[in-house]
Image (cartoon, rainbow, N blue to C red; front, side):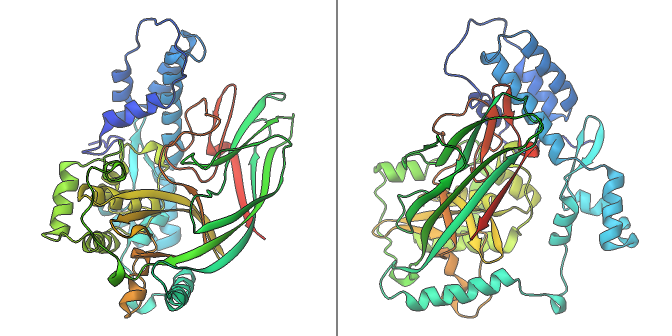
Length: 479
C-alpha cells in the first residue's frame, strides 16, 4: 500500500490555509471562478506532485500576475517542488548507501526499518522516493554498542562550560561568562538564478537587542550601501538589502558585525512558582495554541497527561516533559520545516526530530499544561560547532523568563545541577534572532518564504518569485 505524503493525525487544513494566507498580497484583484483548491490539496496528500505543478501552472496562465489565485498557485507549486527536493533519492540509491555504510547484510533489515519509519520515504508521482538524509538518520537511530560510545566534543565542551557558569553564578539569574563575537555572514546566489538586470531582494538574520543576554551589537561593514535593519519589535529580526544580478556572476550579500553574549543560570531551588495570573495578556498569549504547529490535539493531551500525572508545580511539569522528550525523541536531521504540516505530530509519528522540532513538541506540551513558553532561535557559536539552532524560554510567575534548550539535553553527569543545566540555563555561545515562529519581516516579503516558520539562513526573492535554498549557499565565519 502506498504511503501518502501526509501522515496520520496531521492538521492538514491548518497547514494548507497557512500556506495560502502567507502567500497573498494585501491588494485584491477582481475575482474570477475560484479554482478547486481542495482537489489540489488531495493531490499533494496523495503524492501526485507533478499534477499539482502542472495544475498550478495552468492557474497562473489564466490569472493576472500576482493576484490572489496566482499567488496561491505559486505557493502550491513551490510546496510540491520542495517536497521533491527533500525526497530526492531512488530506492537503488538508498540500497547503495546502505551497503556502503552498513554492509551488504543489512539489506535484509531494510523493510523493517521502513515499517518502523527509521528509513524515511514517500511515494511521489508513483515512485518510492527517500529523504535525502534518511541513511544518516537511520544510523543515528540504530542501537549503539555501549562499549564503543564516544563522548561528543561539543558535549564535553558544554559540560565544562556549564560547570563554570554554575560556579560563577552568585546571584539568582546572574549573567556570566560574557563572550565577544565578530561574525562575517555571506549569502551567494548562483549565477543565472535570475536574469541579468533583475533586482534580488535579500533578508539576512540580525541579532535582537531586547535580551539582556545579548548586548553591544555593532555593524562593522555591509556589502550594499543601502540597507534596512528591522526594529527590535520585529519578532524575527533582519537586515535587508537589494542588488542587481549580473550575467555570469554570483549575486553576493555580506555583512560583518559584532556583539557580546552571556550565559545565564537559574538555580532550580530558587525559582519561584507563584500561581499564574491567568487573565494577564502574557499568560494568555504564551499558553495559547499557535496553528499549524502548536495544537492541543487529543494525542498531545493524552500523552502529556500520562507524562505529567498529578504534578502541579510548573518547574516539575517542565522537568517531566523535558526528561520524556530527552529519553524518547532522539536528535535527527530534519525535513525542511516548510513541508511539514504539523511538526509535533511528525515528531511523535517518526520518534525523532532536530532542535526546533523537539522544541516545538516541548512547547506544545508545556502550553497545554498551562506553562507559558515562547520560541527563541538563531545560531549556536560553540567552538567548531557553528550552526543554526532553536531553543525556548519558560515563564515562571515571580521569576520571569528562564531559558531552556531541549536539544542540548540532559548532560552526562552525576551532579544533578550539571545534568539538568539546560532546563534552567543557557550557555554563552548564542546569537538570538527570533522570538517567535512565522513572524512578519520588515520590509515585508512578497512571495512564499523558503522557511515559513523559522529564520536563520536568510530569504531571497526577485520579481519572478521566491529563490529557494537550492539556489544559494550561506556561510557564517567567527573571526
